[in-house]
Amino acid sequence: MKGVRAVIVPVAVVLCVGGAAAAGQSVSRGARSAPGQVLETTRVVAQRLDKAVTLPGDLTPYQAVDIRAKVEGFVESIPVDRGTWVKHGQILARLSAPELRAQRAEAEAKLQAIRAQQAEAQAKMVAAQSTYDRLKAASATPGVVAGNDLDVAERTFEAAQAQVDALMKSGIAAEASVKAVSELEAYLEIVAPFDGVITERSVHPGSLVGPSAGSLLRIEQVSRLRLTVPVPETYVGAIMRGTKVDFRVSAFPDQTFQGAIARPAYSLDVKTRSMLVELDVANPRLTLAPGMYAEVRWPIARAQMSLFVPATAVVRTSERQFVVRIRNGIAEWVDVRRGEATGDVVEVFGNLREGDVVVRRGSDEIRPGTPVTAKG
Image (cartoon, rainbow, N blue to C red; front, top):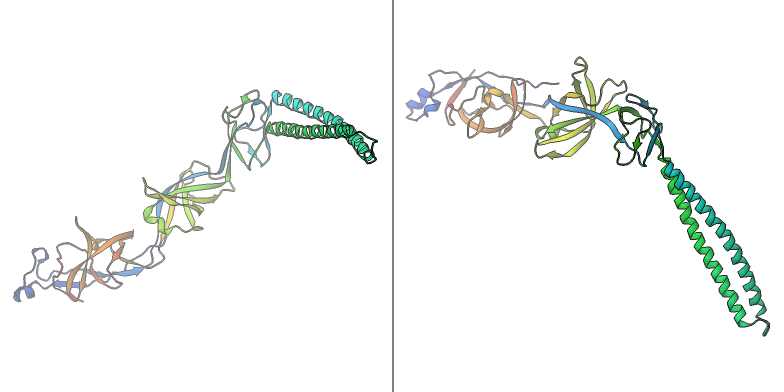
């Protein structure tokens, strides 16, 4: 952490109370001081703000999923338990659903029956088409084939063709039914969606599970973590993606860990006036664990130079906040807003410039317009 130090230039200032009285000028009661009173002053310093503040943070898994059963059935086997490390695609549990087996057998039997009907209807359609084609060819010779016989043959062929088309549609629906049941049966094997560790297990072999029966397991990815930090509105302007941020956890007080700013929320919580920011934290050695509380050293920096004065130079009353500037031998009040404090100096914003002379220990008793003389 880089601190900012103001260069203090002491200057002796004497209130010219006697001179003002000799000239017949009135001096306010607040500005009166003993003859020869010395006021220590300093100059306004321009520095780049570079400091860090401590903010709370929470470590959470990079990914976390409650594993549930998509179909209803009984747990046949569950080879994992709390603390088991698993790989993507690894089988976590096998379920048994006799009803699905029966549904698949019924769907397959129906499909076979439709296919047999399709073959029979196809043969009838071919025979009807052959009869119709012969009669149509013979009808080219007048008197050989009666017109009614040709019409009957045509209608027979069209009916056979319609039956084949209907059975084709039924066959497609039956195939879809078999496929749907097979897809449901695929869910009887529950696999890991990503590499991680099982953190919870709530069922055992023989348990009846289903979509509404709650979760079977919980898997979390902990080799990579998310560090969530609520950043106050005052510091939001200093958020820069990719910035490395140090933090500590109470479990390892002598170690400093690091994360990278990855996902600002870009929206403030109106209740806390803070923005949630997520940092990516690599955890290959599994030293850190989800749920840990972190003390984050949040960096604060500004792109432009800032003006600094001693904290004692800023005067705060019920009406205003100001510093007492000495210009051309006259005291004047300059309204300021306080920024970040670092060490014994504070960042100020107002009508000031680098090098301006201000009273080191400001007071509202030094009234505006008071003639002063700087010596030394």
